[in-house]
Length: 320
Image 1 (cartoon, rainbow, N blue to C red):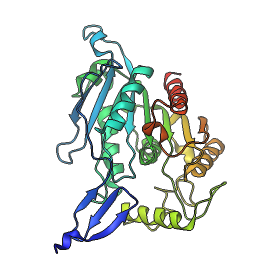
Image 2 (tube, one colour):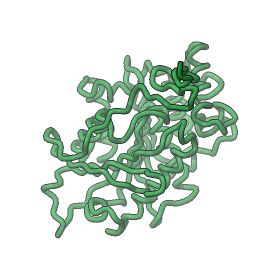
Image 3 (cartoon, helix red, strand yellow):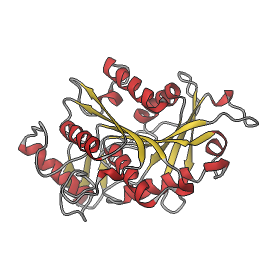
């Protein structure tokens, strides 16, 4: 029997690492092409950001055919980081393509969805660094500059937003913190950040968190699998409220929205994060709670009443 048949590591129901080192992703591998969306009228295309790392993005723009290059309309920009536990999913998946087409259409916003490198082939902090470089690349399009014409011609980077779900929300938090510590190119400021069901964790329960021992053990192990250099789940990268974590009064935006789902195992983490941020930070903080729902339900059931309700609130945040 080929030794590759043996599974060395099983990560929940979505990833296996075989004894040979081969990584088998059981979910989040399907992709769909970019193009014009008949339902929303949004156009999209794929671009390569870094030739050395292969980091790329899918850009969405609403009503492209109604925009004019001679007198271009200026639209706000949302940089989006997909979820998937840092180890599955892609910016080109049908799940994110459907969601971001709708979001771009409803918010009338340009979206740059980043396809960062995944663990375990590229363990953390690679994803954070990829996303920071991608954010810097977006910022380089200020004042009609930069290589991407949709951004150079149509973007208003004075209205720059960040968002992400799950692991992507974790990334968005850290990009907001890093933007204050290191500054974006051209001195750009982030107007707002949306964290949807953020993937935060820690060694001790918080709030009303009630997670069984088995799930807690598996979530602990997942973090160490993703970030082998870490000392554990009180690493500030996964636990931003841990003792010794950077103070959140350094968040580099004007306002921030935290979305949590009641049945999500990490819901209490999101609520406590919201409370800490509200106490420590001078910006506007909003909490959106989806009662009776679970982690990233809005991606799995985008037409459900709760998903539509959350979309409405996210759109309002981006448009205000």
